[in-house]
Structure formats: C-alpha cells, structure tokens
Length: 317
Ligand SMILES: [Zn+2]
Image (cartoon, rainbow, N blue to C red; front, side, top):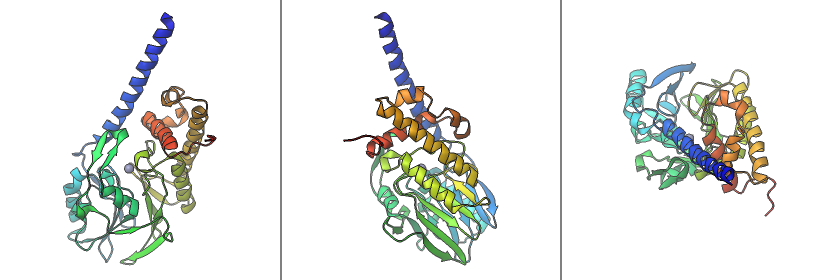
C-alpha cells in the first residue's frame, strides 16, 4: 500500500516535472535574447542568411528591390533595418515572403515593408496575423497585428501551385506545405541559386515542433519534409527556421526521425499510454543528439497534434 502510494506520488512528480521542463524549454527558446546581435552570411551569389533574430531571414538584392523571406522578431526590427541599410543602402524591399505567422518570422514586417512592398504568404498566415490567438503550449496570447504588418498578396491551398514570379530577373518559386509546422507554411525556392527557404518545416539542432494550435501536426511535417527532399539535389542549400543551413541529407535524417517517432507515439497511444509515458520511454532517444534537448515539447506537441486533428491511425470511432 505504502509502495503503491509512493509510486503514485512519484508518477505525479514525474508528470509535474515533465510539464515544467517542457514549459521551461519554451521559455528558454522564447527568451533567446532580443539583444542577440544579427549576423549576415552570404550563402550563394549574393543571397544572404541573416541569423540572430529568432528566425532565419533571407535577403537578396535585385534590380527591383530586395527580396526577403521572413523578418525576425519585433524586438530586433530596428537592428534588421540598420543591417539592411548598411548592406544595401536605401534599396526598398520589393517582396517580403512570410513562411508562417509566428512572431519570430513576421515581427519585423512593419519595419521592412514599405507602401509598395508585396508581402506574400499563404492566406492562413494572414488570417492568424489578423486575429487573437492563444497558444496553449506557450501559454501566450497574440494580438491582431497592425495593418502594415499583414500580407497583402496571399494564395489559397486550392490555387494552382507551385507559384512562380520574377523580380528583377530573379526567378522565385513558392508553394504551400500543408498543415505541417502550422497550417500556413510555405517554401520559397530560388532556383537560379539552388537555395530553398523552408521556414518552420525544417530545423537545425532542434526538433521541428508542430504548432497544433494553428494547424501543425507531425504527419504534415513528414509530408513537407518529403516535398523538400524531392525538390532538392546534393548541392541544394536549405535555410531552416532557425540555425545553420542544411543539406538534403539533413532533410532525409529529419524525415527518418519524424516517421520513426510518429510510429512510436501512435503505437503507445493505441494501448492507452500518455505523454509522460512516451517521454519516460524516450521515444526520441537516438535522435536527441542531432535534434537537441527539447524532445519533451516535441513529443507533447506531436501527440496533441495527432489527437486534435483526429489523425491518430488505427482508431476506429
Ligand atoms: Zn514557427
């Protein structure tokens, strides 16, 4: 009896511990400093990756103004403006793509988009930016964004894709990665440079956490990763949401990890196990070295995304 009580107590402790650790990981990720300096590095033929703003930013000069992918955290918008001015003078931003709605990818929109800037995204990204959102797993509320921050050139899932456009002689190809990290993810490809900005669907050194609150789930991440692999060759540079640039081999490793973890989570869920048991069973064990230390948040969100979307395989209603 005593032992049983103690086991129960330990289980409860374990539960609270796991929840606290997961919340801690989110806080640590979010606290990644607003005073972190931005750093720009040329990836290929004039195309820059700007890191340090919470999410990677891509900038490419063209004769029709700068082409940018994402705009970083709001706290670093001023720094971003200064960096762009130092590099490119007063060249306007001709086109700004938003890979998804999250603030560390759209926070500088108002600062970098001028009156004539095309701000391009999937329609779902514009919708999330236009409304109040409570993201349970971050315990954070987001307010509607200012009109000047909102995408003004959106497309729907049903529109023909990929979409191609040319800006200042630069061919750009983009399209939807359906319900993956969020429900509005897009890739932006620069075929002349063999560079693809993958937004939240690819990560370096951390797990690609699905935001199930706004439509992300692990099965969509698997499909998105496959789409990106199929678009790549061995010299393609893939710019992830955050961190250093990836190659096709890294995407293959991500695909393997996602597929394996999904199967393990589903197998345990089907016999009635919950998140704490999945974490205790270390369903991500052999992948933690490559994908970092936020495994608990990843497992928790992957599991919730499967339930929320009614997507668990093998469940018969
Ligand atoms: Zn994101």
